[in-house]
Length: 196
Length: 421
Image 1 (cartoon, rainbow over the protein chains, first blue to last red):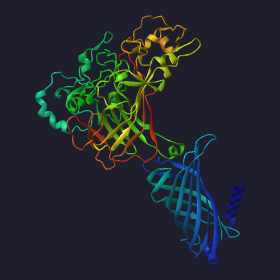
Image 2 (image 1 turned 45 degrees about the vertical axis):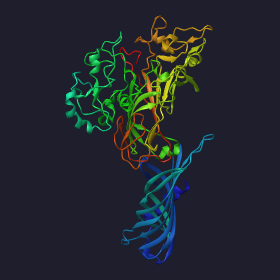
Image 3 (image 1 turned 180 degrees about the horizontal axis):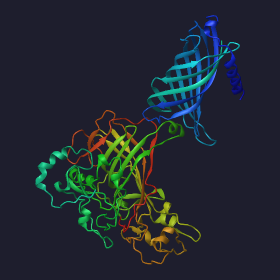
């Protein structure tokens, strides 16, 4: 609830505050951001359901602005979906680049990242029930996204974004079971709060 | 399904028929019209109407199909002929024409594998009666996974069409473990089988008690005498099951599903000459309320279920079941025999547990020729071989995938249907 209130305050501030763009600050600086959102995730393989599952996401990132148009950083993200019998989790660690291609009047940005993804489906075991082996996979992942940067006072910004993450094909493993050539896609709508 | 045709076979048309037969493949049905069949199979024209049956053999024979060998076979028909309204007194399960596999499989020739067995080894004939051929199918069956985790992520759907000769009215299955099986399955994960075999179900000469699987009941010699041992088992109710679950004391209720339930549990594999497994499957065919149970006190070992509705043991135990009351109109019919169409112990309620289907034929090809038992698979046909289709895949991922029960709530009874059925 606290986070939600803070976001509302920041949004209201952003409507009245002058937009501060990368060009108005020193060119080299660090940045930090954290965000939440929602995402549909889908796993594909020859016997996968292919269902798109809607879960919550979160992310934390840090990096350096190399110029008024380019920033590089690292970003950790997660997606979680609880179901009746199982819990799905996807974690990502990506090297990301932000590009601010437009003029000061339209401060949108493009994002690209590559890195690793770890996917896990685990049993939600009731007491006395036998625990099934989790399904796990580790995959190479790539991400593309687009967002908009609303500047707010104090070197903060609010950044709504949409990203698409896809993985290379990899095995899903459960105990001795191996499902080959599985891949994963995640479409995310989120909002992060950035500093500097 | 019904084929109107002359029973005068045109043997002279063999040369005209052969090209068609060459492309029949593993499909159960050829494109040859019945008029051009090479002749009747042993299974053809063996049904004769009983006292309660109003159809003629000619009407019955009109439900026929030419098998892969060019011979004419009986096939599925409804319990009542829709054209004439006459009744056959028996049923063959679910109309296969509704199966999504029917376009490929066609009408299933009853007794084809039995016929081929004659060619494979003339010294071991095994022919089965007509009424025991039972079809079951279901489209788009959702398969089950071994645990919640796998079930949340994976899905496999299958079309299944199967036929087993499962007579539940006579002494045949007390000793005989060889029964014709047609098994067709196609799944979304690439699993596909079109197999016809003589399935060896359990041990010849004996069966296991349905209420105590550890109790093997040796009855006598099987036909043929050299019937091979099979995997699985034939679980059939015996007198001990009846006394434990059916004949009960005042205030108790007979437990028909425990005391009167047959389960023929198949463990079938298709193997090459070297013994390499190409495919395996293990469907369980179950019959509720059969007309027979094993009673060693009877001359032929066949106890009649309907008789239990009248039996009272010395201690007062008797059958206390609605099905008895309905059959005998609350005991007012005193002389009902097992073949009476009013008896509800006629084996019309059946279901099939599909269980697992494993294909390990990744090197292909998909067409194999096996002996009638599904063994000695080779790439070329041989005398007494059956053409089988096995998808060129390996679906053995180490994950446990099994099928549910098909037809659990279906009742194939109809007007005039009675034991023997």
